[in-house]
Figure 1 (spheres, rainbow, N blue to C red):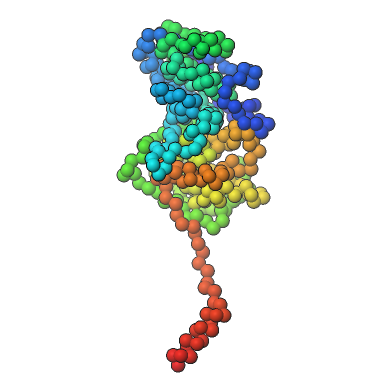
Figure 2 (spheres, rainbow, N blue to C red):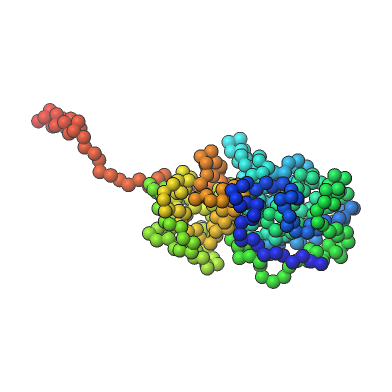
Amino acid sequence: MPLTPTAPKTAEPDDAKGGEKWCPTWQSHHHTALPLVTVVVTPHDEPHYMRLAFAAHTPPHGRITVHPTPLAGTGAYLAHDLVRALGKHLPVPDEAHPLPAWTHNSDRSWRIAASWFIALGITHTTVCRSHRLSKPQWEHLLALSALTGTRLTLLCNGPLPRPTAAFLDTIPHRVLDTTLAATTHWNPPSGPPESDNHPWWQHTAAFPPRDTELWFRLPPQPREPFTIKFIPGAEPTGTTPPLPVPGPHQDTCHPHTAQIAARIHTRVAHPIHAACVALRALTGYSSQQIKSLHERSGDGLVEMPAWAQPLLNAARHLTHLQGHPDALNVLSTPSWEHPEIEQALRACRLLTTPPDRHRTAPVTTGTRRADRSMLRARVL
């Protein structure tokens, strides 16, 4: 029988409450609400099973299909594959700009993947060639499923290794081994999308960026960021956005804003960094100014437009999963991450602008006044 998608989670998972970091490894005594796992078995690797799996990739309905990176040895690679299945990409490294530090950390990578899953309402995940995954990678997937509520389908295109098969017997699961059962299970959903978030996060920008792509310059950096008391749904007053920003119920974007939004959603995999890039594109704030917003009593983040809300929501979820549920500013990043945000700006083809400096009248000191008097006497 086809699985019925569950409603996207809106509250914080229990695992992230109490100020504790979420551990992205399956532990049966901690994860008691694991959704039923579906294992599709095709020992002879029939190609039509792969076609069915990829046809089930319908992000507007909260369903994604993941093809793991071949021969990837660590759990971090699989987390990156999940993020790419959402249309988000890690930057292309080079000698001057290596991969961000978080990409080499398995736990941080899985927390980032989980925060996107919760914010974007992913309800069903299919992982192809699961017979090649190690037991620790299966445990990461189960922990993600238990945390987010996404239903997990594991397509095994070959026989399972003995340790993995033994581990499978310890979790609630069902096995499908016929074409009819797999077709029924992956039957594409009909009707309108489950979530209104998808039009804002679907990937429409080229990756990697084209060499001939247009660069946009950020607004001038203000001397001090204008902040307001954050009231959800309230319109900020006293500010003029430097870019034409659509209203919360507006379906279309200004062409420039649409390009910038598509680039951020496509090219910045870290939720907090993506939200920081969006805020910098809208206000001109520096990373240091964004970091200091929480230090001023009563001040908070400005209201974000609709296209940036999924970024901010994912940043909030990541802050909870990192063990900081009471953070006053979810976009506060340590100084050593600021180069990674600058790297994300370059990936989105956004140029920084010098700070907005107000002209002041020149200060005349007594020494300069005396020098001018002596020069006037010499001329006379």
